[in-house]
Image (cartoon, rainbow, N blue to C red; front, side, top):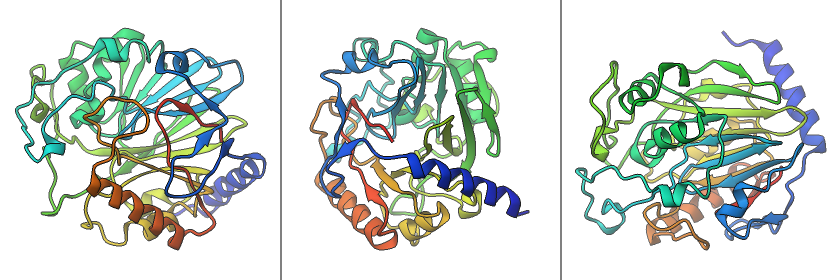
Length: 328
């Protein structure tokens, strides 16, 4: 049931925080990457620049993020190995072997308190077990993510299965879990549907990682912004009522299968002050700037920006670059 008091409280908190919040970024012009107040010279440098009291958000391609809150770090969908499956060459191979690249991951990931997983397709989950084992970070995700974590040898105590509706308090920040939906392809279906309701054999190829249900997350930093994270371009409007984030990381839609995607999303999120498009880059290329964008994805990104401008003209659009520290 809709709780009007809860909605009013959340909107008050959002509006109060937004009054003091600003994007420490120059050039928020839609259509070109914005430049942050602080730009890491390299991924390795980016991993070590957090200072007490600072809050920064760094995009790691696809829907991946590193959030540093003082000396504490939260990761969202960290996929850094970015290997070739043929997806961007028109020769997709669902038998592609899962590959983890420690030489790419280790310089970027020095720590992680929580690892938030939106869903378990390879371009979101592939590196999560390795990162969790390396850092001891807690993996928050669906029951499928839980069972896949067990299959990779992670202890159950390091895995936190959630469904949506949970509000997890970590002191300096809270994580609100939102039940969400995966996007649809041109046939109104999706790659690798399904869930894991028990521990499977250790996955070996990308098709062993199903969608596994989809979540979104909202992080509220104590004394800082509220930021909404999507990993796929669909959602249940009713589940977003009252979130009213300051910033929304919005997944670019690969098709038009989801009706009125942007107008409904902007309205459901109460027109965020800042919208950051994600999941538009070629995630099978190295994580170096400028991001590589396939021609079709460039058009989808342009279409997303135009749709945000039309549906939520007071929202600012920030097109991110890799490894760049953004402060909201």
